[in-house]
Image (cartoon, rainbow, N blue to C red):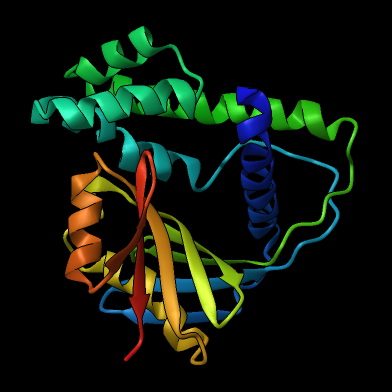
Length: 240
């Protein structure tokens, strides 16, 4: 049951990163602009057939580094309600070994926590590969990607959006390397999509309860809670 519940999400997520690998073949971004000394790139990736998957060469390390402290910080909060929700999420939504994940989350070894996140991503890749051995052609909805790089062309963060009906867009992923946080990049990675597509009327997203840092950022940017589920709140930002 668990496998069926999350497998579609895993495959679509890996498909996205597979398409992202085309950047290594010099696929040009749809739009490039500067924010201070940072370079922003926008890619519109349309659903299409493909016949290969490889590692997350560009973005997985960013994602792993950005989220390595999520469970760790929750445990440090000593908030029993949040910790219990996090534990249930690890088991019910992620299907992971709770004892092992708590051991990693309790560790003060940041590198260990990052490597654990990468390991989980690589496991998802292997699952997707097995699926794609028998399903070589998959169509997915268009995906919008915004990347930010420094002057040395090092990727610092990214955001991923999916277009939805009624001039809305769903923010499915936002990740920024810790060393690049608190520099205003989150605002650009989120709201640049409204400049690229001026007809958009709103951005919405889901945030887990225990990621208080992310929730505070979204609320600071004017996002409002529109619905509540077992593990997440849905936030939405509407243009005036």
